[in-house]
Amino acid sequence: MLRFLTGGESHGPALSAMVEGLPSNLPVDIDAINEQLRRRQGGYGRGARQQIESDTVEILTGVRYGLTMGGPVTMLVRNRDWENWLQRMSITQVDDPAPPITQPRPGHADFPGMLKYNTDDLRPILERSSARNTTALVALGAVCRSLLNAIGIRVVSHVVMIGGVWAEFTGKPDYNELAEIAEGSPVRCAHPQAAAKMVAAIDHCMQDATRDTLGGVFEVAAIGCPPGLGSYAQWDRKLDSRLAAALMSIQAIKGVEIGMGFGVAEIPGSKVHDELFFAEGDGFTRGTNNAGGIEGGMTNGEPVVVRAAMKPLSTLPTPLASVDMKTRQPVKAHFERSDVCAVPAAAVIGEAMVALTLAEAAVEKFGGDSLQEFVRNAESYLENVKLRGWQAL
Image 1 (cartoon, rainbow, N blue to C red):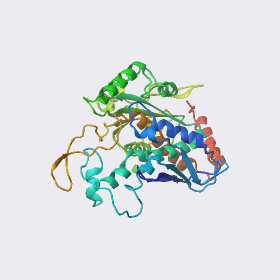
Image 2 (image 1 turned 45 degrees about the vertical axis):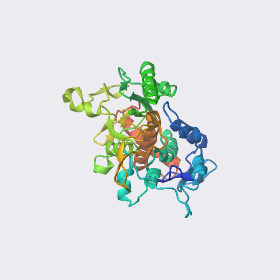
Image 3 (image 1 turned 180 degrees about the vertical axis):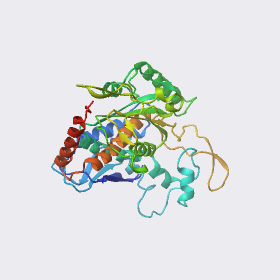
Image 4 (image 1 turned 45 degrees about the horizontal axis):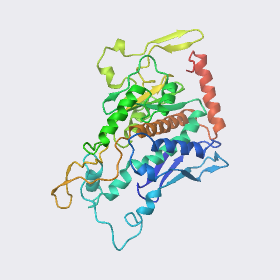
């Protein structure tokens, strides 16, 4: 079983991540992890925090000579801003503690968190619930990418909407091409005209007269997934439910679609379901991929395609109305340093969560205590499904 945990606070000393269940001899490339961390910090509309931090990973356990050893892999990403928060986030008692923050932000974890954890200060809630903590998830996802690459699975993403501006694509998508174009876009959008309008929308929200935030939608695709990852046998083993939960766990994500998503409710079944064909040399093929590569809780051999909707960030430069938790008087919500738009970064985090979920499903399916055994088991399974007519895309 593959499982992972993260720890740390937004302005604490560091963020930590641990993953258990990786096979031995898996290559762990620190530069590749740092590249994913760099991608998470990019995107048009990010705030001042990204100018302070330059995230790099330290590996503390589980790796020797660049290869996993079979035990838990532990990673650390230090917060450079910690030196500015030594008193406010001190781990030990201080003589002069920082004044409590009592003005919860609508849409944030502040209000329910203060009630749940019985605190008169939203600082402890803010610190752990902050999207800064997704840094650890991206580091974990980068390691899992290495495992997926060993069996031919690649995870990519692109932004399809920001602030109501949609990127429209026709025909069956080439996700590798879309991802390559998106990497050169400031908003990670593969449609140049739509990308320019997205940038303009973000610029408008940056103006002093507007001072607002924008959400959007990103799409993640996993290419090269063999059929049979996941299961229909139990609710919690269905891959689509696991992917939805993984993406919904990302801060500010309020909706997840797989394939055609909510669109399937609007049209007849004859226009929804992906017809199956067979031809010698080509094997089984589909004319469409409305199911997003998942049928009955399992991958079906088509690209796994998921979309996630991100709400506008709840830390607003022009604060919304709130109530002081101490005085119960009307106030403006607390303002913490924030981004105007973080959808491009969320797409990278989405890739990480999809990689983690698929890696977990692959370990379940193929097992193996070493990478060689894992790959050998996967190749044996692929040979079997190829004999039955399935061809890798």
